[in-house]
Image (cartoon, rainbow, N blue to C red; front, side, top):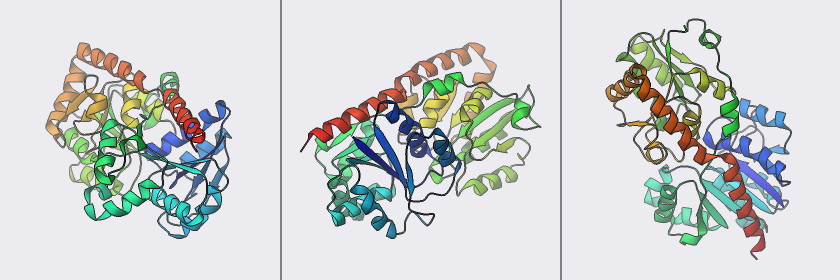
Length: 365
């Protein structure tokens, strides 16, 4: 069985992180699983995967992932693998078009990672998207809610879509050791309470709400952001406008997220929506209380374990953070529920379900 995963790049993001953590596990099961990147810029995630020496990594250069020439770059790879497993747009569309142009016999799988995207919101894309989705032998939806979104947008037959929830490497989180606060930044003290958000700086993540919540909190509460993206400067502008420059840290993309999680006191994710957020599961697995906005893709995972606050409500978020910091029993109870919930999302379970799907597809003529 030869499997090829295709994704836009390994710049940052939950789908990208999922790919670099699952590929070594396929090798452990004796399966050849390689990777093709539309853009092979040498980001930290790519460096991390190269160091694992678990697969072949191919790239189509370093030009835009949206360049149509990528379609023709994909075609030769479709002829070399039994199954091609695709993640994210535009890779999803370009692989489907390459399949139509080439007539390659490889079977296609696509994982839909988000409950919301611009194409789902605009009916003008519906006829074209239906053609694209139909080129895939199976669609993996990462939650039942994602499956319903796909069905509503594409009118596909229900049996074409299978729900396989994403997972994380629980062992990597549990085994991580915390930093001393001043190892992260010289101005951090043991007495500081560290609030951590791990997310890309894109419109759905809404870092501004967490920044505004800091205004409602005492000065020894410090906010740490991990991630990068086109809206990072916007977040910096909000920090400067609110005179919070000494209380907010921007660490960029990091490969030591488990250690940063263990160092923090409270973990927050303020997104407007998610697919199935790996950051939320990692946050809950870390042994720290997790607080998230009450939105699709988060409430399904967090409800009954972590704490939910109304989207964009910085005052309520600040109150929840204060409650956790002032009530030790509440803090411990929240941690225990979060850790128990995270155990339901072990990456090994996800990989086993992927392998079962691959085998089923190869048995199908």
